[in-house]
Amino acid sequence: MGMSRNDFCRCTPSEFKATWDAWNDMRQNRERGEWERLRMQCLCTLQPYTRKTLAPADIMTFPWEKPSPAEKLGKEEVMRRYREAKAAAGLE
Image (cartoon, rainbow, N blue to C red; front, side, top):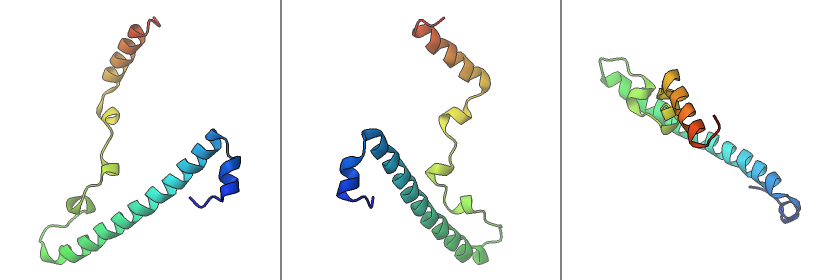
């Protein structure tokens, strides 16, 4: 993470978590960028050999591009689940 030992020892748990989250986000963004560049290289390499115009998702679909299960649910389903959870917790 690039922290000195003194910085690490002085961190509170919440400060360390915030630092780790920022470092992890930066690492993931760098890795995603590498995968995106690789996909574009593949697309440019394959495009001359197909009659169809290729889209990047035709080459590879990454996990971060797939919608989360919550995004697939409609508003009514989300509200129904919310009411069930609320009732189960005795908050009605």
